[in-house]
Image (tube, rainbow, N blue to C red; front, side):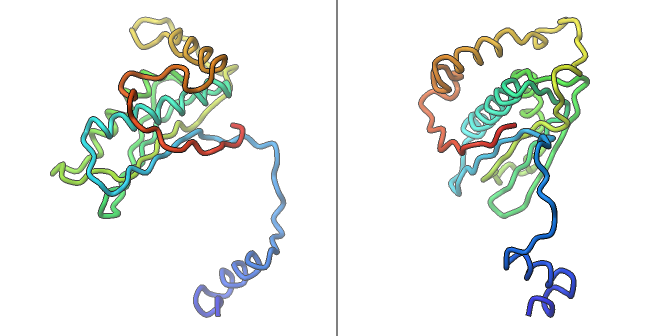
Length: 189
């Protein structure tokens, strides 16, 4: 039946997988190339402030994981799904690889503004954010801190507080009083 629906190759392959037969080797020790996070917003309409709060939470979670893993990234990707099931994906490549929360947040907000429909009546019901082309810190090209977003002292301090006292010890003011939802257990990055 699968062969008649999907064709000879795909039908046989899906049948084999359904019966726990997969000849492909398991590859271990390979690092993921991207670190991301996503959140479903539900069907009710969200205010722009609520959507921005979710974006702040996602960016904060991703950049914290990047710093813990010792990774940096250049490409910020924002994926949206709207109530009518249409989708929008936007990305932007930064000049140098970073894991700086404020810079990535500003980029994500800029991408969100460009991805929203012109009529502004459709609101996203799900969103995801990730940083691609992550690299180990040993490849990071250092730059002179000539703008106010170059420093990472705040990120380092927040990471240390969260490491010592738990991930809920400190949060951003925009997230106070908002339900963060469930945190899914993650595999190591």
